[in-house]
Image (cartoon, rainbow, N blue to C red; front, side, top):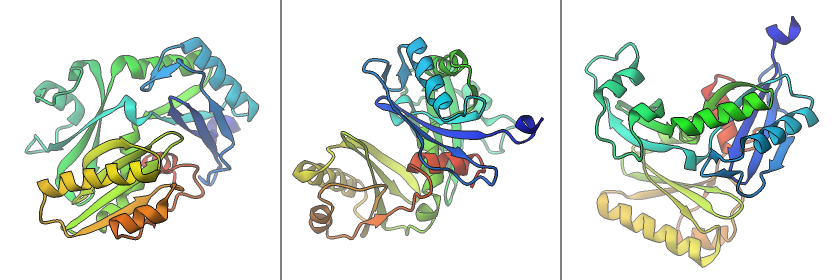
Length: 282
């Protein structure tokens, strides 16, 4: 009965290169980043599970090694698995089921799949009551991960898109941005660095950049110059980092801005923090 009344929860971040996660204790405080495992090559591509049996064995062994096989898992899909669009609210009054209403409306969104073939997620945008973020993933990708966790004998409670978790983790700095601010968020990974640009609390640009060196500086400057041409009224750049970055001092000097470090602890990553916030666990 105790396990049913107070089930243990595990936060898990899925990437093509590996898995990482941590246990949430009864007080919703996360434990150490104790769940980490690389994924063998070609088992997962752009978030799509290609070798379900192998991935299921790995997930099961990972949770078993931490004595968490009976825990409920909240997992976040990688950025590559999801496509996003910013929508002006298409309904004069909020429908009872906005996702189903959006499917029926079927607006032209230039996605690589139809809304009928997608799993959809809608998110409010901080300070923007008339706009929202739509995140869509191919249904076969989502169903593929459901199969992986089922084969592993693991109770999957939630599969969340990375973009929604990112927004949840950034809500406070997004609300503090002024009209003339452009906020650049750099998310370093092992081999590259993901850039997100936000204006008025709205995501406007996403791109994978080199991890460091002059290549990162030049690519980031090109991206900023491109968006400044779209919005010449911008006056101030905020640069936020989610982790250690190679050549940070050189980047700050080139952009003439001091980077801000996002507070992630005690979570193991920005996405795990956002996942906990989304689920009301923080």
